[in-house]
Image (cartoon, rainbow, N blue to C red; front, side):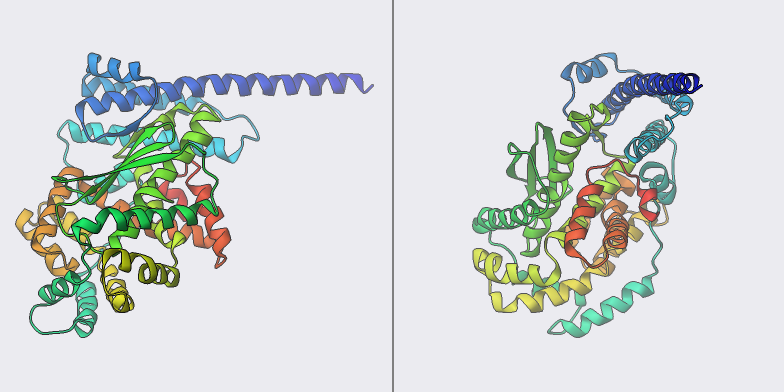
Length: 431
């Protein structure tokens, strides 16, 4: 009497296996088509493909075919329809479910970018939601003025606050002939702390270059095979805090580690080809920028950072280490102005202020020098609502990690590592 039940159970198991194999084959096909879609969009938008280390012939084919924006949008719509028909097998692992939602949202974001390339105008918040799966909160001028009043009491001298702040900062500028030594020390410190908690492939490495003529201060160009090219823009003065900021953000445990872990665990171990390409204007960027910024605090909690700066980086830069705490007390207040740049970008992209007024807003409420404010407006011209990924991204990541890890620094590292090894979306960080 038991044999029929065993036979039915065996047939059910075989059926589930067949469904699982079929699902895997279809997802592999969709994954490849996703990569080719992103590469094809990159033909129309030179900033769109931030990194690619898949088959070079796919990129060559995209350039040769140069498919129209309308054709790509129709293909993306059909792709989404096929994904919607793809039913995950019962008991699918969390990572499989995350992958399914991730791909869907990435392609929806791709379609929004295609609409923008076709000339459709989106408001700042519409662009944020469509491309990055998140919308930054609105902050008032009075909120920033309150912080500026606090700063006014901390900064010595008299006269305009911006002038006093810039004069204060000049004492903490890294001399150009010491830049490389300071960055080397910062990278060594960031890497050592990261390797205590995150296992990386033995062959991972990166090259650092100093460049000019860019709208950004630093950039990680991931090359594949666990290698990165990190560029540091030297157009404007680089202050001592930027050494750790950029070393962690672009390197360890930021963009370099993020891309290495995705390549290792998802592209290579699981064969998920979609992670061999990185679409810059997509929800992935909020996760990438948010984890890179929050990773600074994970690697260097405030007291440890101040100690490292005082004992290692200030001497390497030839700066007065006795003033380190004074400097970082001021920077903690300035950090409260980080969303001022978002407000300038929102008004500028929405057409309520022009480029000159946007630069003036950034000078007034973010305390940027005129030169740095002008550079920031050029960044907004090039990247639009991407600016939300740095501060909103960091806040969402911090809230997610700390909600799961509590105050335990080791658990914070483990939750952080899990996040940068998985295809989680910005909207899922609120769960």
